[in-house]
Amino acid sequence: EAAVTQSPRNKVTVTGGNVTLSCRQTNSHNYMYWYRQDTGHGLRLIHYSYGAGNLQIGDVPDGYKATRTTQEDFFLLLELASPSQTSLYFCASRDWGEDTQYFGPGTRLLVL
Amino acid sequence: GDSVTQTEGPVTVSESESLIINCTYSATSIAYPNLFWYVRYPGEGLQLLLKVITAGQKGSSRGFEATYNKETTSFHLQKASVQESDSAVYYCALGAHSNNRIFFGDGTQLVVKP
Image (cartoon, rainbow over the protein chains, first blue to last red):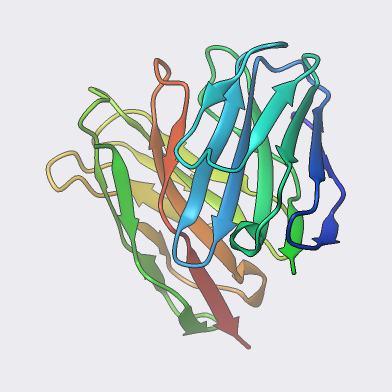
């Protein structure tokens, strides 16, 4: 089973702050995803990627950038954090030809 | 569009009672959707509970089961006797091999009282 790790697990920042959330998967899956989870909204897709250097726009991309530097690493960037971005963020990966996604443990972000 | 609607939580059930969490889907861009139930235990990420890729089939895992009903576009999750350790958030989802993504429902928090 794929191992997906996220760091940090918890983060507090202030409005206007710069935040980077990291995700690493160790099974060389092609696809990686960033979601946010908010009460009453379920998981909403922010960005995803199908390989190093690739980026696809999800459903709620505003205020977020992302970069896939290697097959293993996918970063989510909040350059001017706002309180509306307070959320629980999940990273996931999946292999080509598979439909099951494997999730990291999540990062809880609080923007004051 | 493609979407999933599920029972709004929290759902509170006493240990050893039966459970049903309703899930209905709309798949307008996916001809043959695959259906999933994921579970998220406290402090952990989502993990696959069960999936069914063929209409009319039933999936089961850890005492949970769900049947893919194409006629009613439903995929309800059931368990005959819940345990306190089943307390978690359950997500219904749909996707396809040919699609790059999965569409998740809002999640249903299950609280099992001892």
